[in-house]
Image 1 (spheres, rainbow over the protein chains, first blue to last red):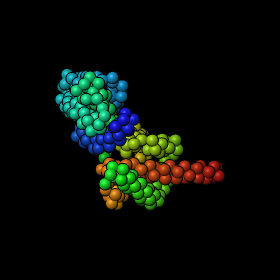
Image 2 (spheres, one colour):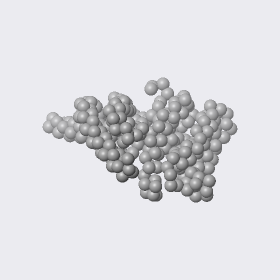
Image 3 (cartoon, helix red, strand yellow):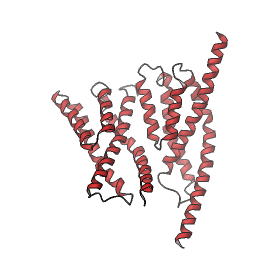
Image 4 (cartoon, rainbow over the protein chains, first blue to last red):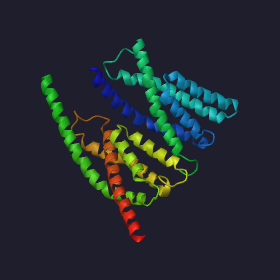
Amino acid sequence: MNAPARALVLRQRLAAWSDRAQRDAVELAESYRDLLPRQITNAQLNGLQNIVLSAPSFSEIKRYVENQGNKASRAGRDDVADYWKAMLKTLNNLHSESEQLLGSVPGGPPLTSAEGRQLADEWHRRLAREFVQHLVAHSLWVKPGDR
Amino acid sequence: MTTQATDDKLRRQRQQLLAHQRTLIARESDSMADSARDLAGRMADVVKLELGQVRNVETLAASTDKVSDILDLLKKLIGRDGRGERWAQNGVGQMLLSKLEGLRDDAKKIADQLKSYPEAYDDDLPRRIQLQLCREYLRHVAANFEYLRREKEQSYREVS
């Protein structure tokens, strides 16, 4: 498969993945709905979205989420710390999904090569971006008690 | 069967599926027109909801390849309308959101009818059909909103 054809197929697979992932993002947001919007503020959510949009590597996203969790722990907010832990676990798990997605379309570099690892990190960020977009949109939409 | 013959058969089935899909979507689109007009009427009553905001949703739907992008945008618009002056007023944004989510079932029904082209059918087809139905519905809503809003503005001018 040539490069443009591969890029097109990957784009279609990403779209299908993202639409499926929306359910998981909604589930995560719903399971912490009581924390919205006071303990988990819109500013924090927008901050997360900005980070996933601009981070040059996944490790930067990881650092932001860990930092939010640590801040909550220091403030004695275990429920909020749990939220960020769950977020980190979910975002970390997207790594294997990004590799699966890339591996499902022939013609790319081996994922064990330096180029392949870089590509996997880039796709890890793409999946994180999609997931966080769904999560933030749903979190802004839900208000405790009225829906 | 030679590779050439297999490719020709697949190409033919794809063309047939696409033609059938277009017909089914056109039929569904016509059947959604009344519901879209009703919703556009409610939206036109929301004074601060502007045509540009409705067109933005329509434009995004036309350019994205994800249903979730449209739903996310609506959720954000509703969520950010804390004063309930636009998308959150009278539940208009929520009605639109629910309608678009519900199109998943209609898309599945259409996709089921296309299973008679097994070689051209793929598991992602229901999702892509839902996206097309969302585009159709939003097109109806935006067109009716524009018409009804202008009508209201005109009658307001005539009274004053």
